[in-house]
Image (cartoon, rainbow, N blue to C red):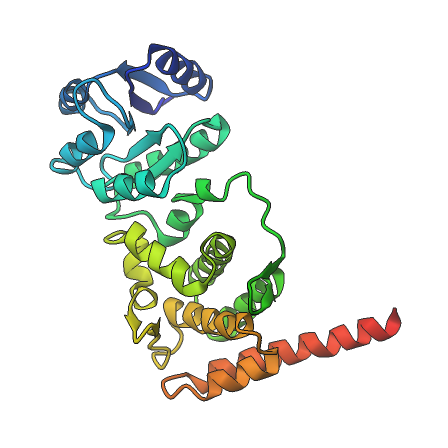
Length: 304
């Protein structure tokens, strides 16, 4: 039976031993070293499925080591995880700019690490140019939200939205617009992910600005490139190109922007109709779904 091979590079002997013991328990063959140059020699001589660099190494830092790996190997043929001492936007951004697939931070949850490694190993064995966007969204940077309780009701200074409502409306809109099941799942994950980060970054625009910097050049960035472009401080959404993943996602995010500004659902829908480039058919679908929800809520309230 094939055992995926993981190379863990770290100066701390106790951490190296701990990682090796845990990785072996999950079925990985584990190689240890503490210098970046040694790691580069190993991947030249041996098949390694995933590299894990700690930020601090003996001869260089993990970001420098990752950049050297990227001079020889691409994003998928040699996946790299950078392991930081704590969560930090600066460390996270440095990791992705260096070419890391994943940033994780101490204390490591090894069951989650195993899940991430299994996806990277499977992706490498398929050897596509990049991870499918759906998988990318499910694993990249999810540690930021790990352990945080995400409330269904997300409130800002000017308004609030129900995450479950928004996701339900997204699913109906994506299906009615004729997106494939994979595209529907991608749109759902993107909305889910954006809403998870909303309480941290305060606005949809701030979240997308953060993701634009974080994911530049990756498969998911190209999938949602239009969402990451701004014009006069507003989201630039070419939703006239109907039935696209970023078009559907952008429409729902625009709805969220309007709701968070304090508008009622009816007012938010009216604002969407006023956008010249908007696809009216998709707004109609949203309007029907929201109206049906409102009607059912009225019935349930009367029954109570």
